[in-house]
Amino acid sequence: MCLSRNPLSNELFMEPCSSKEHHEGYNCGQLWSLPVLNTSRWMNRVESDYRLPPPKVFDKKPTGNAGRIYCWILAYPKTHANRATAVNQTWARHCTYLLFMSTEPYADLNIVELDLGGPEGRDKIWTKTKLSWMHAYDHYISKADWFIKADDDTYMVWDNLHNFLSVHDPKKVHTFGRIFKEHMPDKAYYSGGSGIIFSQGALRKLGEAIGRDGLDSRIWATPINGPEDVQTAKTLRNLNVELERSLDNDGREIFLPMGTGVEQTAKQRNEKLWFYQYCRDVKAGPECCSEQWVSTHYITPEDQRRIDDLETATCKDTFPSVWPHL
Image (tube, rainbow, N blue to C red; front, side, top):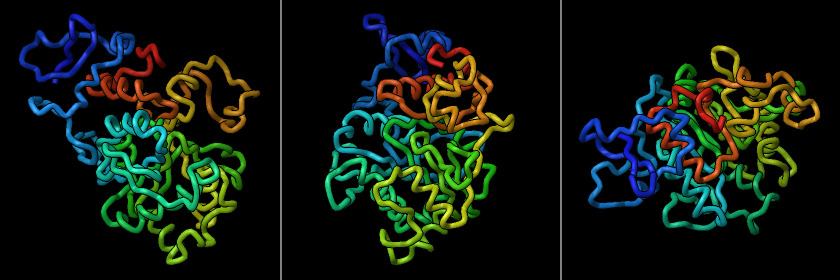
């Protein structure tokens, strides 16, 4: 595939490389500063010979192969059309299995309709999370090696995710994410926004502990209206499962819960900011985070597509230094 530009609108789009003239030669910094890439490529155009594969089809070949990856997205009816749709069209299309956990159907999304016993609300997120993990165990425990929980404004770099997971045995108990309050072992938890990953072994341990008790199992953390990421960590402690620090080979963070620029552009630690109180060991500035980061948070639908297009244009090896956004 080659990168082309519409001379009238200045929008970029991907098309088959019929000649070298199609490639505009933009570097990644220039790409980021241009308008959002033409999203018409997501339309189901019958005449197109470069249509992207539908969701749930794994079509990338990273250096490492972590195996089969199941993704469930915490979704909401009011954001199906924008945030969830953008996730569905970008990074999550590479998941071996992709399900959106919500309470109402939406034609273009593979939604599991959950009965929360009441209307959607923050007080129902933990119930929603428990039902989602139970669904993954009940229907997919033998079909996938890794299980990912993400929000509808999470973005994951698929090659980096596979390379990170490929060195771990999914049959063993592993959990990954960005740890908050690591200095307080009895209160530490993974930030939900940048994603939480369970190995098959970890989900199997959870599912077997829950057994037939379902939502009533004493393994689940209480109260039922607590924050889902905090409650997930409490549940793991009930299982005697320790949180694992997720770093690259140089000891830098690979889960970026504050977005793609907050930590990297900080000139120094601001001890009054809650984030630095929750992450006492994190460095400020570019050395905080890996160039091979796996996941980030607070990504708008427009930036979901933009980052995905930059990946498609093979810009992933050049960030963060040349991306103005970072």
